Image (tube, rainbow, N blue to C red; front, side):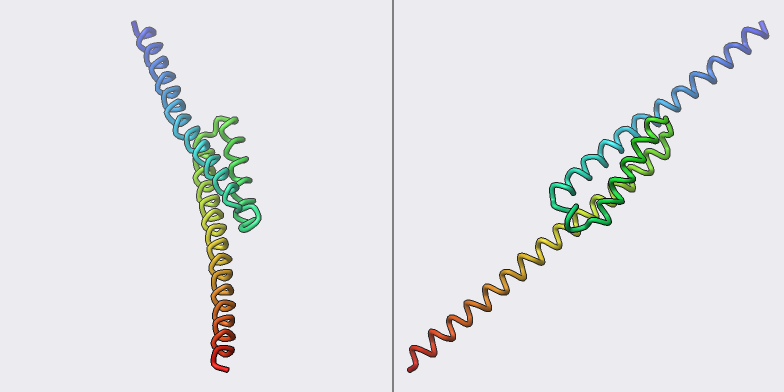
Amino acid sequence: MMNMNKQWLIGAALLAGLAGCASQKTPATADVAVSREAVSAATAAGAADLAPAEMTSAREKLMRANQALAAKDYKTAQDLATQASADAQLAQSKANSAKATAASDELQQNIRLLREELARANANNQQ
């Protein structure tokens, strides 16, 4: 009887341990997928050219998160995936900001040229 209780306790402990691993695997896998999408979105936004340091960091952390996931180190995978997502979002924000700044600069240049043309036209009309 004592041996049966011991076996039951060992079995229950193993099941609890497996359930704990499985419960960590799902969020880690989801976080890695989310970070993969964040890196893709940042790449599509042109962050590789406009925020190369942040993109390099995001890609490296995503690669390490995938390695940790493969090694069943779910906590590390989740942490790295979260960091990769943050780096990718920062890269995307920097890329969007750089694009907006460039568009603003171009608009300011066009306004300046139009003002010069208008000033010339007014000067010619006053003669």
